Length: 246
Image (cartoon, rainbow, N blue to C red):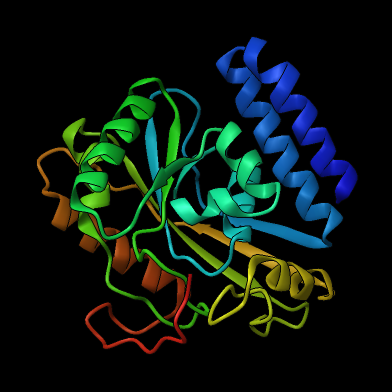
C-alpha cells in the first residue's frame, strides 16, 4: 500500500498536469482498482454505470471511505466529500489532487459554492459522485437524503444513477468491520479493513433517473427508493437506526 500511495504521488505530480481528461480518468480507475486488489477486496458489479461521454451523477449510500474507490474502480468519478478528508494523512492530498470536490458541512453558502464546482465538472463531461445521506451507516439503514446535492444534475437535466454499496464476507453475510462509523479514526478504520479476509464489495446500479421535468426533491426521492430496494431495506419513510457515522 505504501508503494501504491507513492505511485499516486508520482502520477498526480508529474503525469496528471500533462494528461488529457480521458487519460486522467483511466488512471484514477486503475489506481482505485489496484488499491482494492492490494487490500484483498473483490468488486462485484451489477447494472449499468454511466457510460463515458456527457456528464452524469452517481448517488450512492455511504458505508466506508472505501466506497469512493469501489465506485471509481467501476467508473472514474469525482466525488463530493467533506472538507475533513483533506486532513487525512497522505490520502487527503491524493484525494484533492485527483479532483475530489470538498464541502464544509453546515454552511449554507458553502453548499452553493460546491454546487457551482459540481456544475462545472458536469459541464466538462466528468461523472460526479455524491453520498446524499451526508454521513456513513453500517449499511443496514437508509438515512434522509439531502436533496440540494442533486441540484446541479437537475439544473442541467443530466442523468442520475442510483448506486447501492454493500460489503459482504465470502459466505454472503454483511461485513460490518469496514464500516467507517462511530469514533473510529481513518487509520483505525484502515487497520480494521486490512485485517479482513475474503471481502466482496457489491456495487449495484439501479435504472438511471432522467431528471428533465423533475424537481431535486423528486429526483432525491426516486434515487433513495431505488437504493433502498437494491439493498433490501425497508421503504425510505421507515425511521432508520444508525450508529453515528462520518
